[in-house]
Image (tube, rainbow, N blue to C red):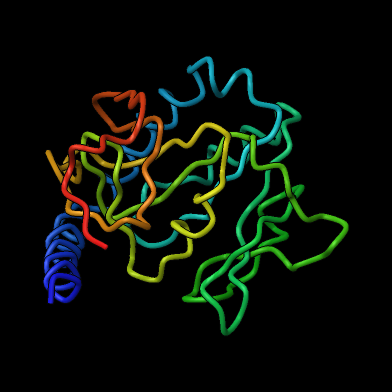
Length: 203
């Protein structure tokens, strides 16, 4: 019953934040994404990172195209996720350019899985997408659980990219939901030292 209630609340929140993003114009989303880009690339964690795990953005997400291209120009290693068919798991693969991505699961640009290019270092810097984050670092994902599974044993720096209009004071989360270390938005950056046990959790 509790699990069902949590799922219902999450679905309502997903509808809310999807609407918030849809109401933004293309120009507004790009302007806000550009601010997030500037904040990220000027951060010490980005400058110090040799390897960056980045998502390939689509539709009304915070755009990552400039981030990926800039990181590659700097000579950083960039890996992008590939969702394994018929599972809820994903793997990251290194790319040399955005042209190596093609439409995959859910229409998201993905790399072609190649064992030689698989990224297995989970101590890198990872950029995490979401519909929304709360100020304690918990995310409202898209409901498939790919990132929660992947981040479960990730020891590197986890950075959530999010429009400030999609940051909530608190998002209900389950015991398998992962949180990030930083949230970068278009008008503030939030550092989260740890996931707060005092926040509501449900098995």
